[in-house]
Structure formats: C-alpha cells, structure tokens
Image (cartoon, rainbow over all chains, first blue to last red; front, side):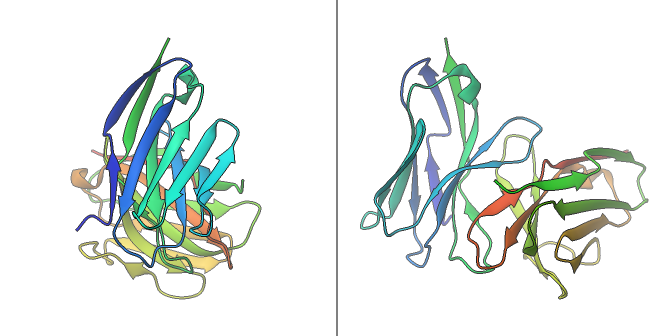
Length: 112
Length: 115
C-alpha cells in the first residue's frame, strides 16, 4: 500500500516556466510534509517543508501548497532554471521518531 | 540546514567480506538516525531506524544479522554489511533527526559495489 502518491513521474519544463509536482497522502495522522531535491549520486537535500496548520509556504522560488481536506500537497518551482534539473521527492511523517514515507519521485528536466 | 556526513563515499569490496559505513551528524545531536537503500532511478527504501543507545528497528524484509546497525552516540551511527554479496551493491544513505525536531537531514550517500 503506497501511502504517498507522487505525480508526474517525469516533467520537462522550459527555462523560466513553472514546475508543478503533486502528492497525495492517505494517512490523516501525517503532520509533516517535506520536499527533497536529489541530484545524481548525491543524498537528498531538504528543500522546503510544511505543517498542516498552514495552506501555503514560500521560500524563494519554491512554494508548497497544502490542501488538508483533499489530503494533497504540491511543490511549485517558479522561474525554473536548468540548475533545478533533479529528482524531487515528497514525503510525509507523523513526527516523533517515525520515519518519513516517501513518494516515488519526479525527474524534472528544465530545458533552455 | 544541518550537516550529516558519511564515510566512505564509495567502496568496492570482494564477495564475502564485511563493510562498515559511518554516518555522523556534524552540528547537531541526532537522537534518531535512519538508514536507507536506493536503487537507480528509484525512491528511497527505509532499512532501519535507530535511536541512540538502543537497538535498531528493522523494516520487514531487512536481515538484521546481515545489516548491523549501531548508534552508540548522539552523533554517530554505523551500518555494517556483513558477508557482502553482489546483490548488496547499492547506494546507502543515512539521515538524522534531532530531538523534538521534525526535520530530517540526509548524508551524501555511500556507493557500495561488491565484486
């Protein structure tokens, strides 16, 4: 049973465009939703995260939108750049010592 | 963000030998550390969760006698792959979380190749 479903699997965006990646979760006990960026051969880097008490969080060009009733959250990358080309993972957890549950990842390619 | 290091970054070993991978939190105390395995173009697969000073909790299907995890201090956890075989070749990544913290920070990963 996949607890966090991520889409699309791959995404191609023109430089300067908006990249949008979506995730849906099933477990209503989840209360922490991070996004990670991973380059080939590297470990994932924490990009931005949100708790369910807010509907949106913005950090620079990266924005998380969160819809608690729909059990969905998304990552928006504004003004996408070739350097943003990487694999992005959404995740969720119940906090405490519980591990993160990851989506399957989205391979983003930003072309000039 | 917080910094987590891993050593070595890559290792090649012969079948039947054991390999130890170290994971260190450099600027915070990690009460909980996690070990993941990642195959090419796939998501992260959780292997085990370890809390400082206690035995690791392994995920279903992960052999605890093969993948020995030790979390002896608040800044160091080790993963030892015992009697390694070619099918153990993979990218191993650790992550760490501080006390009363939701954020989980990952190390740079260790590429293990068993010949």
